[in-house]
Length: 165
Image (cartoon, rainbow, N blue to C red):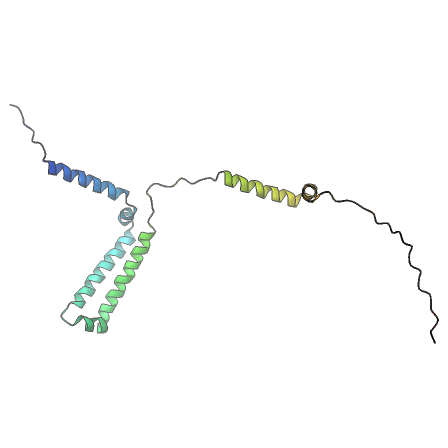
């Protein structure tokens, strides 16, 4: 007897493809990865949900919502606790890595080489007197050495002058 294999329905195959695509998207999503691996983030989300649920229960307990919002201190405490936990959770999610793959660190390139060359040259000019004088001569021209000789004779010492009457 021949065994007849039953072909899966097209809709079953489409569902499997969608589930596979969803799983692949979940693996590549850094936010979902952060939620899966960070226990503190999960705890913050649970606390926020439970506090919000308690606050909603207190808000809809039969009293007027405006009166509950104004007077109910436990409602205020639940809302504050929920807001704090949500703030902590969103802060942790913002710190999630943008990519799963680690970035390769760049070592530099032509810019780093030029920067090192300029810094090395500046240090060499600052330290070496001969190199500094050569650079200044190249930029501003060589200094001319000169000796000053005067054409005039020195002034006579002042003699004591007679008082004027």
